[in-house]
Image 1 (cartoon, one colour):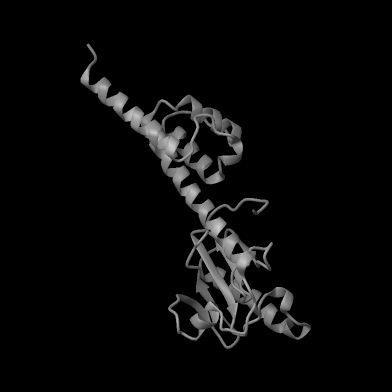
Image 2 (cartoon, one colour; image 1 turned 45 degrees about the horizontal axis):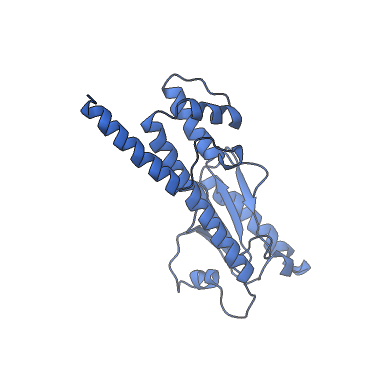
Length: 217
């Protein structure tokens, strides 16, 4: 006779496998879809259960297969993959926006925030620029440094903008220090469609408080 707890376990397995199929997961993961965040989560999980894991993605993948029978690990992986899929969807959305972006004379969303027509969380304000918390953060700390002058992009900057451009970087450094990014951070300027610039107003991204990967996407 099959015990009740075995029946429950089978039901749980069927449910989990259905859930995994719904999100496009397969037990043998190709390394390309095992991102650093997921690898880190898995490694942490395995280490707490006494399983040694090396720093390589391939080793994390093999360890994943070895402990796939654990329902708690399945749940962890499902959650991580859903988050990864969500990030991929966000990235696709930004690419679409960048492809559709047009430079116009109309005030940009950043200009509207600077003019307090749209709410925004300010970290810094001066006569030349502002620093804002990014509404779609890609790191624990992610802020933007935006000039008050609506320059459509870095390729539109003139030689006479030299002092302003230097000021933007100095403000990025100052705010990064205020945000306690002493372990480092990344400064990014997206330019044009291929650069995934979705707002036609020059701005600097500053990301920190997590280990960033290289090369960037």
